Structures are given as structure tokens and as C-alpha cells.
Amino acid sequence: MELSKDLLSLIGSRITELRILNNQTQNDIEFLTGIDSGEVSKYEKVKRNLTIKTLSKFAIALKVHPKELLNFELDISKYINED
Image (cartoon, rainbow, N blue to C red; front, top):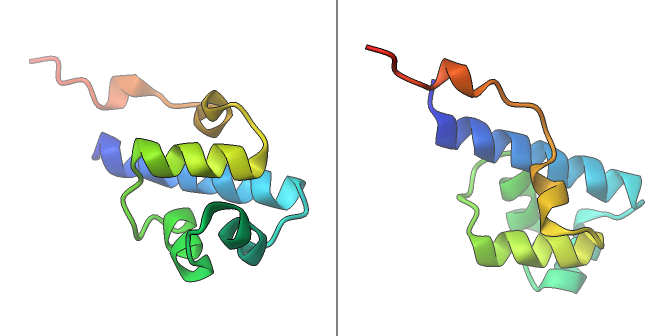
């Protein structure tokens, strides 16, 4: 398993979850962030790498503290190599 890919997947799912809870469409997020709605979809589906700058834009558009985009469960022990 690759931690970075799993993190992007969890963050993408969290963005989708918050967007739906806010009754926002991907077009709404495009308007608020300047990120094309097709690109928003790619972030949600883990087809684009997320930067801190982009994470910040999503947080503002979703009206949440950036840490809310990282609010998910993750078993880190699966990724720690204990040789």
C-alpha cells in the first residue's frame, strides 16, 4: 500500500462529502476557487495530485478549516515498515 495515494483518496472523498453536505456542485467550487469543474472532479477521484495551495482553496470554498479536509480515520501501522 502507498500512503500518499491513500491519503489523496481520503482527502478527495472528504472534499466530495463536504461539498455535498454544503449542497454545492463542482461548478460552485469552480466559481469559488477558479479551479475548472473537470479538475475538481479529478481531485475528488484522485486523478490529480493535491498541493497545499489547492487544499487551501478547497477549504475556503467549502467554508471549513483546512484540518477538516484531513478529518478521517487512517491506520498508519499498515505503512510502517518494522524490519
